Structures are given as C-alpha cells and as structure tokens.
Image 1 (tube, rainbow, N blue to C red):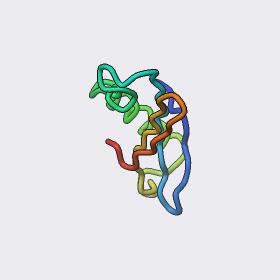
Image 2 (image 1 turned 180 degrees about the vertical axis):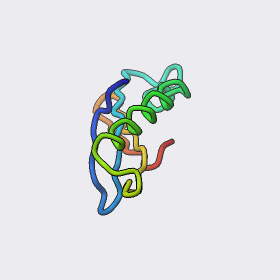
Image 3 (image 1 turned 90 degrees about the vertical axis):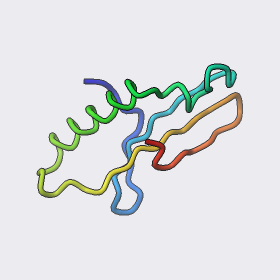
Image 4 (image 1 turned 45 degrees about the vertical axis):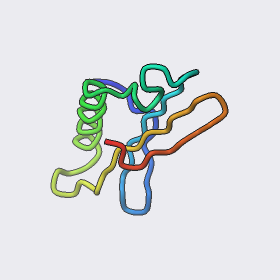
Length: 81
C-alpha cells in the first residue's frame, strides 16, 4: 500500500506523521509537496494499519500530522490533512 513515516500517540489519539524535507520553498516547499494523491495514499495505508491492529468497533481517534523540514528549520503541522 505505502509507508507511513511515524505512527505515534498523543494521549488517546493515534497520529500518523508524514515527514518531508525540502531544501527550498520553491513549488510549495515540504508541506506543499503533499498533494491530494499523496494524502490519499497515506490515508489508505493508515486504514490498512487500523484494520490490521484494531477491531473496527474500537478504532481510536486519529489525525494526520506533517513535519516539514527546510534546512535546519522544523515545523510540526498538527491535523494537516
């Protein structure tokens, strides 16, 4: 299906994290590089993970975060998509 960079917990919420690094902000930078197609792929991979490790009636709350890195600067976008 795909890969997810990090799967973490923030209290009761399961957090799927995409990490992107770009050397410049041309063409939208790190955050802008996660287009609709990439979001769909990450969502489908997360769905597969949930189906593998949880009962459908017991899925935890989930969110999708992005860590965007440009040079030495790191920004964490919670609930990015």
